[in-house]
Image: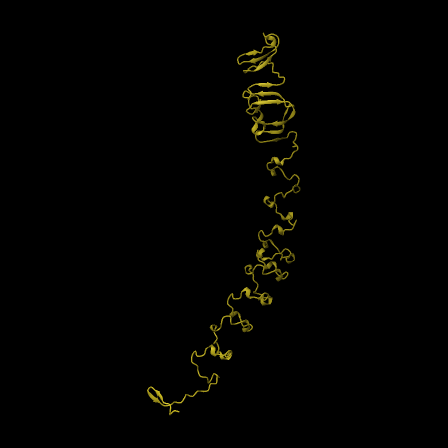
Amino acid sequence: MSEFLQKIFGNQEVDDQPFPEIPPHTHDGQNSPLLAPSSIDSVQIKTGAIGTLALADDSVSSEKIIDQAILTEHLDALAVTEQKLANAAVATAKIKNGAVNASKLIQTEAVVTLSAQIDDAVIISAHIGTGVIQNAHLGNAIVTNAKIVDATIQSAKIGDAQITTAKIADANITSAKIGLAEVKNANIENLAVTAAKIQDATITNAKIANATIDNAKIANVAADKITAGVINLTSTGYLGTPYGGIRIGYLRSIGGVPIYGLQAGPGHGLMLDDGVHGYARMWVDDSGNRPLVIDTTANDRIFFKAASGNDILRLYGNNAISGGFVDVQTSFRIGSNEPSSPSNGEMYYDPSPSGMGAGGRLMIYNGFSWHAVAWFDDI
């Protein structure tokens, strides 16, 4: 056919050239020719075509591995060593419950001693053998209430005399932890029970020994603490008050006879007061020979009444509402001795006045001289 085919290259006729010889392709990695770069992509590679022998040593780097491509079944047993774990890489959630037992712990190094490294309620009573934790293993005040599960520590777990004062935190023993009648008299220091430690109304009469409460233990007695009854005093005893020298009971002996009653100092005495309506006061005055004084309200009146309620005697002063006079509604008798220093209006009865005829006369002083009241038979 070459005589009929004319090849022109660069405006020149070129003779025919034979095709290059193609070497055999064995796919054995020895006689295979090199491929152009990037000429084979994932589409040209058959699934499963690349085996372990096709990979060069160290040819698969971390960049060639897809995230989460390596599963548990891809790891050989014990393949993950301590050097392969980052610091703090194993969290509590990564450890299966019950996976860490006694055989997995280094006996001389695995016991944690700091309470801050143990979560609350992690170690329960079932994990602790009877008699394993001794008093010498516990630091002072290390075991707090928050580290002990309720009702975990039973009496059988505590050795005799194992709980010392140093093992009890301040204020940790509450009343609920103390059995009834457990605190004996020998356990209470002298003067240890103060008023603040005794509840209100706790001390009953039966708790007080006879003759224990003396005067020094009694504050001022209020009226509501005194019940009706008799206050027994000795033959010379009395009840006294500091102000005014008032006392009730034995007062003095007069003529060898003991006198009992109410005594008050000068200017003090007995007062009857009904509040806003008025009062009456009686006392021994400190002037002259200590006269008896009766003081009333501004009405300035004194009534003497019988059991029937009728007035027997009414006395009015100079400033009384009804004027200054004596209103006598019963028999009234005045003295028969002439006063030595009479005042205006003063009276006395003269049984035998001279020069006035038979019979006595009522004599009245007018401020200058005495004048007799004329009787009917003298008129």
